[in-house]
View 1: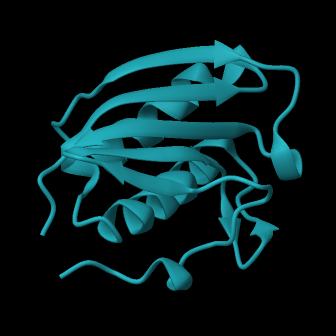
View 2: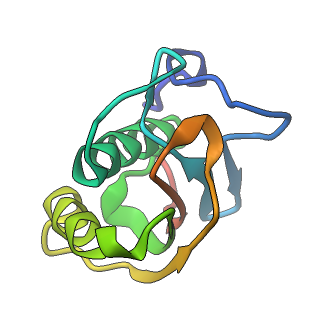
Length: 124
């Protein structure tokens, strides 16, 4: 059974936060929002929350973080790369999706990190 999309964070703009296209589930970039407010003082805390948000979105489509095959991580400071990696490893465990990490000038809501993902899942 899939979760209800109405129970996850509302998008910050005019886009769809998650969509299924056949066996593919694509998640728009997630930041560390809870009830519309940025949480987490460190990049590690923000990665943990962003990936928790992503897990909720994936669940609405019958998928999980274990189904993720590709992520893109956007960082406002590449000096935070190691902290991002530590939190990323905690969230994904032994599962290692392919990944790109890029530095950006800024992110929505003042976030220090944003993560988008593609998952491959036949769904529930």
